[in-house]
Length: 424
Image (cartoon, rainbow, N blue to C red):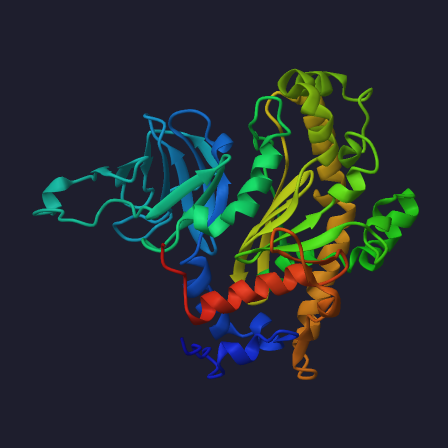
């Protein structure tokens, strides 16, 4: 199919090339509007987790790009995603971040809706001859979950969530859930939201990038005498892997397997005896392997990053403004490990997180730099000369290479030109 031109009149196939991408992709307002239409409102987007609404009538406010949505669990236990906009005159209908209610009442004119979106009623009924159709809250047409992660698509048609994730990303979510003694995540400790004066793609690229830690985070590694920095060199056994559909994996298992169980948690069995005992009861002889391999470090297109101990969700607001929502990974049945993971998440990407401060500075420096007229292009060629195909057919390179970033841009180009792939 012939490439679709961007709003600037330039074909996207020219703006996104194998070795470079054009700077306007991070700054142009018209391109940003097209991204919302062709990516955020078309493909599958991570919204939240089932554990955030554990009880009937629980709700939590979420987003799909700039669109506010309410994730509810109705009295029968079914999950709904409702657009947070009154069907009458357009007011935001839910202002609380979370709660429990079987209905929502618009503060403007008192219209009331079930937590399924169904219109219940409105004051002064004699003012209406009839209400007619279309007065329920709008509901996101496709909502699916995998391992408790809730994904949504504002497009009523297109490939399934299973097709979007693919077997490799799904397997990594399975691996994450498998670190729970009860096989489930519970993301119930709340989300911290950070605002950056930077394009949303810079946030995704940063978490897919294993080249920057030795430099952007050098002061942290030096002050704390941390061995983490050694994982991000050309000598590291860690690999970057393109696993399809814009998703990528930073595979840390070669390092963990040369250490000891729980090295990914910077812990030992003596520090987490209850957790280890629960895992041995669940897995038996396989427990050591599970506890050694640890959690994934995976990017799921377009807005989900699982970074071992914490999860980030990216939200575009404007071409030069983005939000990052962060929470700690918590495992059902593992209170001792959960406390440790929460403390480490707060220290690294919390309000005063050491890594967060470095990354925030880099995001905004890059955004300011991209406003310069020259050079026009952003280079993404690192490691092209040493990429190879592994035994699963995935493209692999060293951890410092930009394999994951190129994976993102290939999916981006696909969606911005030919649109969402049809369901098989």
